[in-house]
Length: 114
Image (cartoon, rainbow, N blue to C red):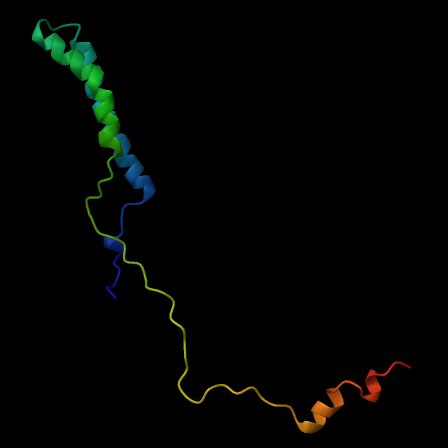
């Protein structure tokens, strides 16, 4: 089995969430710039800025939700549980002494009601 290295593990959920939030925040910042630019531009630039302001939220969500791990390694999980079988003769339970068996047998005087 391949040895698992700590550097090949995927990102923690907190780190992954932080990276997605950064991507989304950058896209929303560009959207705000498009909205502000619509106040100052004319002609085709107005249409480009309007399209950016309208379409960027969709693409920001799609890009932020794409799972991309820069390390790209898979986690190696151990195989199934192996049963331990010691070498040597099989286990034989200890048999009690014959006198002890007779004393524990039903119908002895200790078992009779008084």
